[in-house]
Amino acid sequence: MDTPPSKTVALHLTEYPEEEMLQRAKNFYGLVNRRRSVRDFSDRPVCRQVIEQCLLAAGTAPSGANRQPWHFCVVSAASIKQQIRQGAEREEREFYQRRAPDDWLQALAPLGTNESKPFLESAPYLIVIFAEKHGLDAGGNKIKNYYVPESVGIATGLLITALHHAGLATLTHTPSPMKFLNQILGRPAREKPVMILVVGHAARDTRVPDIKRKPLADIASFFD
Ligand SMILES: Cc1cc2nc3c(=O)[nH]c(=O)nc-3n(C[C@H](O)[C@H](O)[C@H](O)COP(=O)(O)O)c2cc1C
Image 1 (tube, helix red, strand yellow):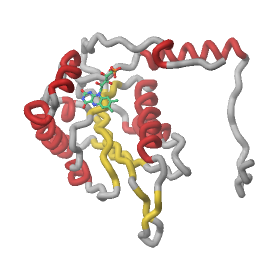
Image 2 (cartoon, rainbow, N blue to C red):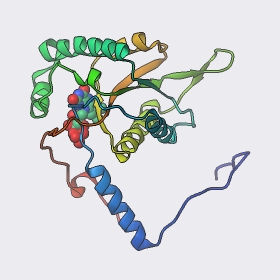
Image 3 (cartoon, rainbow, N blue to C red):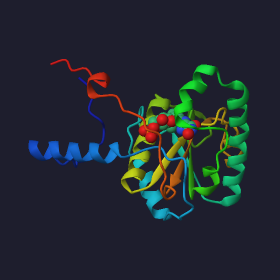
Image 4 (cartoon, helix red, strand yellow):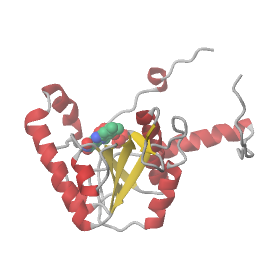
């Protein structure tokens, strides 16, 4: 039996009749099933408050021992986007021309990606997501974080879903290595860059790769 927490608050959860529950679950699947990674963005501006609300949603993610080991750098300044594009394209050139093993290049081929990343400047927002390897207390002493990749992954999923729900397009972009992001954004070495989330409106008439999602029977097993 767990020991009860020292201080508690009321739980505010809404429950639904079974039929409504199923309809809501179907509606949510319908919504997230329309999300696609977009690689061609328009420069149409996006209201900063929308981004702030989506970040608040991301910050509700569960995290190991409630450490909330994430930090989101929200970049809209053209000069910083330009630096990020230069850093990313430098790593991507290395990757596509030298570092990438053949099997990886073959896996990427259907997506049509290459070292050119114009969306890093055309999209109105880049959200650079950092994972805090450890925290610091008021005295500057190291505080241990727990399940950091899992926690940041959940927060990122919520962020992508919140942005999509608000009608925005995203791309998870992971140039490798990403250390250059710490330098450009002045983040400490105890924070590991996880990805650049490119955010904005898709360019007009954008088309996306024809990929298939695995059926339920392939992604889940039921033990009744
Ligand atoms: C961790 C992670 C890293 C990714 N990195 C890149 C990337 O660097 N560049 C890119 O164009 N797409 C990247 N993607 C997007 C995937 O290619 C994409 O999610 C996948 O093909 C499925 O397509 P969908 O997002 O449209 O469903 C990444 C996705 C994930 C989850």
